[in-house]
Length: 262
Length: 248
Image 1 (spheres, one colour):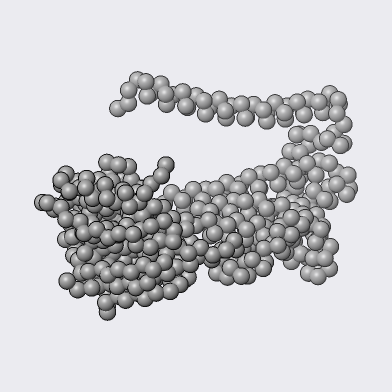
Image 2 (cartoon, each protein chain N blue to C red; image 1 turned 60 degrees about the vertical axis):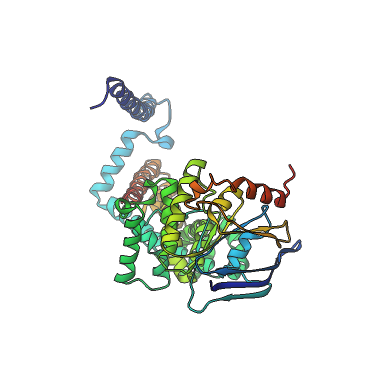
């Protein structure tokens, strides 16, 4: 049993957490209400600002015409494919780079330049090479996520405690043994964290790809909405994107938590 | 007694872009069966380098190293470097996993070692749950698991606080003696060297060569902590202190 003081302490923490949540909720409700009120009193022009009610209407409309889930599905599908590919390729390349110091040194400036290059600039080339289809979108998303993945995982490998490597070598471990018994397990948490960055990067890539070339997907919805000047559709698209990205992020975070606290 | 290891005119040069450094020069000595030799010297005198060369982590520049046939070397480092994703037992099995000698017999040997040296209750614990002194004991057993004949100890206690250091050096000494190992220990702690070693090699500043060798003869020689009370202790301390010639 806890002492009175400890109970008070726990209660204080609970109240504090509750207050944070309450404030967070109040802010969003306040903003939505304000938005709706300004729209109702025609202080703002809903033709360019839309309004919460219009967004709900648009959502229902999309739901009734059955388009909503198709768009979301396509975007999620593209994201998962690029995410898996990006993680796999990034992991593989990071391993090769660790294995071969010479190659790592040779490739270093190229990686740096590729990393700082805004990948969207490559969009037109990708479309010409891969065609105006889903392939282009996946390549786009892949390009955006894979470089960061390579760099994060490779860094995790190189930051392995040198004393532990020395220990492995004192047992005359070969490179494969050092990789399997030391590097992989010790950079495990690093690799998992890189997934969290990766999922957000991939979604950015997918939406950018859909902006450039697509007939379906949330990115398409936003782009199409802006072209026909239907701001309701644009803002609804952004809203859906928020929800989708939050859900995907929390799924990865949940998996990370599960894996790290086994 | 028989020689188990002999080193002749060992030389080591380190190369960097800035130039070359002669780290160890003209270093010769023989290690006898079951002997405990300590190497003391000012920091940077290349004493750790000698151990690294002996266990094959670094290449020698010149000289001769002869190890008796079929003798194995085990290296215990300053940091315990236990893997916190492995249990104590699996940490101790690391060496024989690497040499691919993992079988029931060797595994039982490791379990016996852990039980004999007071870690029975921690076999399935993780390193995070152990004190610094216990971790160091685990590190020693991890080294012993590969059944080495010669143990190289590189400042094995310097990461510990003073009290645990005394206690753990007693522990480690007891384990080493009951397992009948020959030992070369590197340390910067003169008292630690006198209390544990049969012979002390004092090294000079870089390039490290042998300045003096002392046979440590103490009345009522027993455990390291008890040895500190021997009447010759201060005498050896004085001699080695002078050899090291510290200037603050």
